[in-house]
Image (cartoon, rainbow, N blue to C red; front, side, top):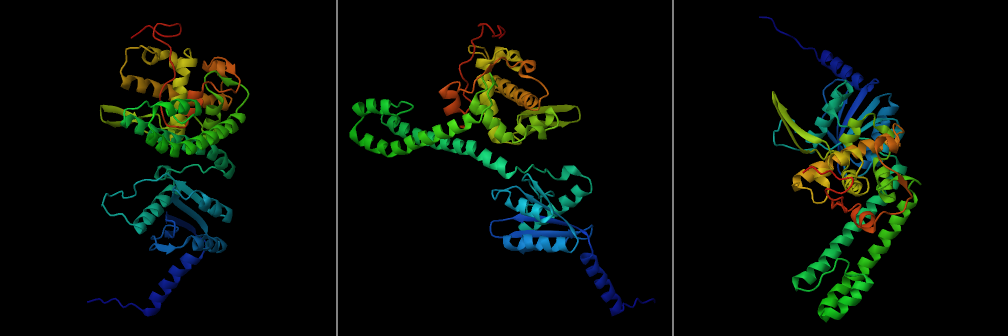
Length: 405
């Protein structure tokens, strides 16, 4: 019977070779599962087996990556976008590493029902390895905005947060009035309306509403200041109905219109494209994917409603005016589908306009106007609130409105 003899020095040689493989210059792939207090990191050297995940503090991680870079390794790092911003990405890029920030996704591909930080780090590392091997669909890499773009984008988003806070307090005050069967005007805290209410409401109701009034008035002042600041940055000439505030917010949410190479990319970024579930001869298109920038999506829908009023001859609006016009015989679902289609086409046309591919006239966007606000309701209350309430629309049968039903 043949026997195999294993020499200890042979095992030692293999261990030394393995150690040398990790110390010679290699392509190091790091999958990182990020938390506020620690990072869980899985590392792979070239195409070797993934090493057991290790836990590092945020203060330890970047110096460790710098150590790998000084050793001559090429380091690639991937992590999911989260609420901690892009500071880690910028530090890694400054150190000389390659970093990929991806859209959050479900990493349990086998659907085992087990989710742990080490497993997530290993799955990220495996996907990064396949991505670097050429399978670009493994990672949904996002574009990281520059610090200047983030600062510019913060102003409209802060304004949106203030508008939501004002609506919440406004609704609480109105709810109190409605609950007791009392008049509940929309802007009950403003001076003129408040003066009338003081004569009608009981004292104990007034004392409760007085608590909200200083906060609401302060919010009014802050929203007006931010609106004026944003409108001052708008271009001099805009297509009629677009509005100064809307134009600035759209541009700051997109950051760079030139980063989109074709109309499919900008359509996908808005999340206004229909979902699809198809197999064989069966094809079913569902609701919009809502993939991408939710702030941009809400603004586009609001702007599309405004174009129904101010630009009824805009081709996407004219095509669907028999559904969108006031008095048209259409269900609510049909109107939603129509306005989403207008918003999607508007995003593509704005991309063409900002990148110089077409002029406003070629796109069917009639006329230009100064950067004044169109209407207080459309530009102050509606924008950024997430609502999709349409402005006054052409009535079916009016000039510019289709007579089809």
